Amino acid sequence: MLALFACTTLPLAASMPAYAQSTPATPPLPERAPGEDAPAASTAPAENAAPDTGNAGEAAPPSGIESVPLPEGPDDDTSMVRENHGAWSMVCDQPPGANGDQCALMQNVIADDRPEIGLSIAVLKTADRQSKLLRILAPLGVFLPEGMGLFVDGVNIGKAYYSRCYFDGCYVEVDIDDDLMKIFRAGKEAVFTLNFSVDQNTIGIPVDLDGLGEGYDALP
Image 1 (cartoon, helix red, strand yellow):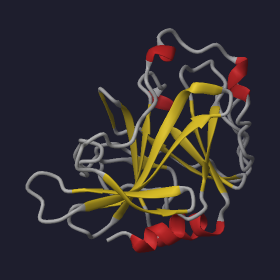
Image 2 (cartoon, helix red, strand yellow; image 1 turned 90 degrees about the vertical axis):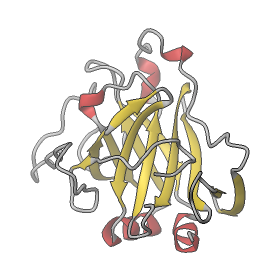
Image 3 (spheres, rainbow, N blue to C red; image 1 turned 60 degrees about the horizontal axis):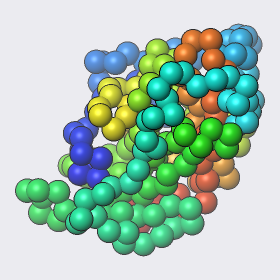
């Protein structure tokens, strides 16, 4: 959808209304019922508890992961940082054929104990300007069936599936509705969780939410 990532709008799946998708191509993950036990600690964080962002060091990375480059921001010569909002930068460019600039709030982050594993987080508008998306680019090699979890200030918000993978990594996209944005505005830190194998400990990657609400309101 945005030339910043060189890919079109992708469908996604998720586990809660605010972390939801409207396209049936990738069915939503069911949210755990109240009181239901979380999966074993080696594959997922405890329910309603923040994942340990340092536990990834307990498991050796799968073969080849070290050679995967971290997701990066746009390298197009036309891309530029228009303004900064807290921990977020508004990056804009004009895709071929577009009448004007398209912009996204971006933040690149890495796991505390796994510097070879990082995420590129973007908040952007769809091409028709009718909705806004949270797009996460994860490294190649992630365990796709497990999806990506989201915690905000220690509270389990939900989980979304990867929509597809390209040469630069694997993508998750989530429609940002009022409920999800309210959580982000009130929060201080989000943690996105992922796995590289079914028997590996969950890796939690923290994301600073400072400035996200302000930048969201400023998106053209």
